Length: 283
Image (tube, rainbow, N blue to C red; front, side, top):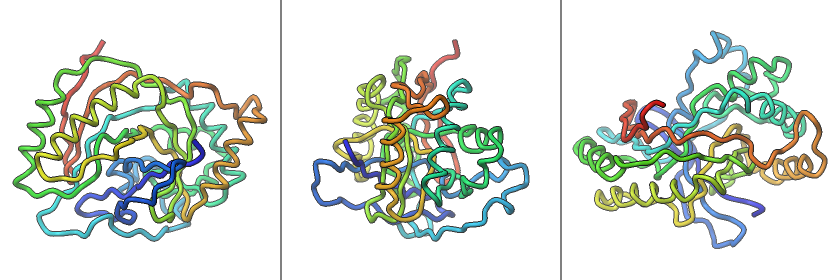
């Protein structure tokens, strides 16, 4: 699959995001994908230990995914993901190689130019990979205050009985949003965990449908995104990934499995408040 399209337009009631989701023209090589975490446009400054002003030399232009309306709150349902420590060093080297060949890449959730971190592997690892990522289980949509309790209760009812399973992030992939204003370098789930996540998406769809909310894409592609660039840099990003596959080196090879994590639970965020939908017991 040469190209996949993801629309990254999530927003809470006080933040900005990318343009609204739309249905792209039919193309068998393109498939729409879910939005990223709500925190994408409200980055935690604490990650940088006070150095955010020095690093944010580029301030990209953003627009809302849907108009802000008083009393509306953005809803996002997701699986939280943390990249394992042992997988971060290889991923850092790959990100460095990509950044050297693709100018203008930024860290997802932080608006920090990746090239400002290339001289410090430890800082790059911490800022780019040491945060919580999200696998979206539903579109990010606005809801009203009176819908909150009903949605959370129904999600808990439908998703309370979940079994532990492994999620394999095994494919580096490039995504672009619908209007080609941003491109993303991501890691996709195509094998282990895909069927379980698909069933969870179907359950979330049922809750959305009962609340007259738009359902998820018919062919969802679970993934997490690590970096983004303004404009449609997908061709260049894809070329760099393919070249790395053809000519891997010790520092930036692409293993068949980038990393694997255990499913830990499902959460949802409404505005700035997080809700635990289901949580796997600690082992």
